[in-house]
Image 1 (tube, rainbow over the protein chains, first blue to last red):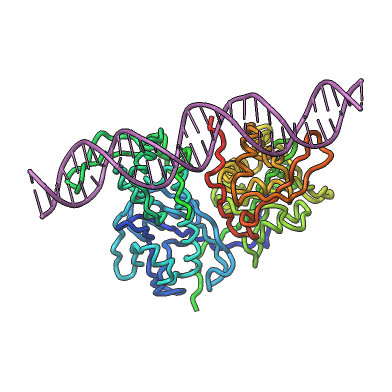
Image 2: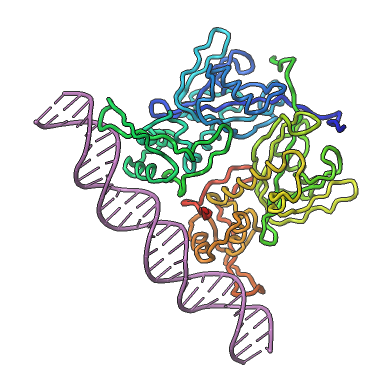
Length: 244
Length: 244
DNA sequence: GCAACTTATCGTCTGTTTGACGATAAGAAA
DNA sequence: TTTCTTATCGTCAAACAGACGATAAGTTGC
């Protein structure tokens, strides 16, 4: 039976989760306030060490549950990228596997005194440098936002920010918040509804809002991904963000 | 001074490299024949353990150099995805960070008796199941090929498979090999040369080949990425692969 | 040298898609 | 009832993709 080399270097491994949502027409990220050193008092991405017997995705889901109180993954979770192990943590080398969660606005746990307090923060505030994140989390956040932006172009994942049913205008608001642009409502409506295999009409309408009632849509069956499965790119041709 | 928790789990970490190139109009992957257990005698992706004091990219470059003899990274190297740590290796849990190299056809080291022999293998043969790869490398290869295919659509990375200078036909052969389709030479020529910021004419021509001499192009300055930097997507609108 | 062949490059034509924007529909608010 | 707001449908021109003809400029065979 083969064994690992005796002098084999082993590394602590963490998972970090960049949970993005759209609140008040702005892209928000879920951040915790660190209660322990290092970076005590600083904002950081939720995450933690991978335990023995865990896979990466499992660890990400567990950490998310521990720090926000959600029972089920509330949106689309995918692996982003790995960072390290050098120079990330003053305690020593740590490899981190960052994950990206695109989710509807969900309530975060109001933690007790000894737990880390999670809260949604506007991404713009963080990227503008108003608050400095712990570790290399600012860089991870930048990569995550860029990934989210490009995913919206050629995948149906914009709908991951909405609930089960949504209007075209709500979906458009997602694109506008993530891309930081304004989109023409009429052209967006045409593209979203005219792409076979993207949305399907539920037959129901909104009521009570200002303006004309809107039709409610859901993701078409072929655009929904089973948990952990890659999303089939159904936006063909893609919905390009305005370049300028 | 903060320290890591005493009971902290640590994992061996490897880097694996999916080196892709185009040879004889087919997509090829660099594979080694394993000389040690586990999976002795099986084909596997080049790679190895991350050493103390190394970052992920450094480890990937070192392993590539050790197993192929290249001195410099011969193409575009980027991180693909991480896998594990469970159920990948009979010796125990290992986390691997897969990397993707898109490179021109480069000669691989003809190793001596005790080194692992690297060789280019047609990706089609592997995916068809003619040879079984060690570990979960077949799955990693599938993910890498899919990443390469989609990268060609909206990034200038097709040129990473060519040398410094290349003709439109050579670039088209790359797209055809990676996508496994035929493309109309005239429409491809129009798209490749008509996209500002993608290619620039060197002013030089091929000589000696069959047919009319072709103009030699290189990647435009704005489409070249500094080492390790993300590639700016300059194909706008993208060059979509035929869907069917 | 000359015809045949090969490959590169330029054009044309048609259907599709985008971007800009007018017009109408259908509710709530005043 | 009028006004306001938002949803949805149309229109039009420019850009673009896919199919394919035509020509240019080499090499190869004879």
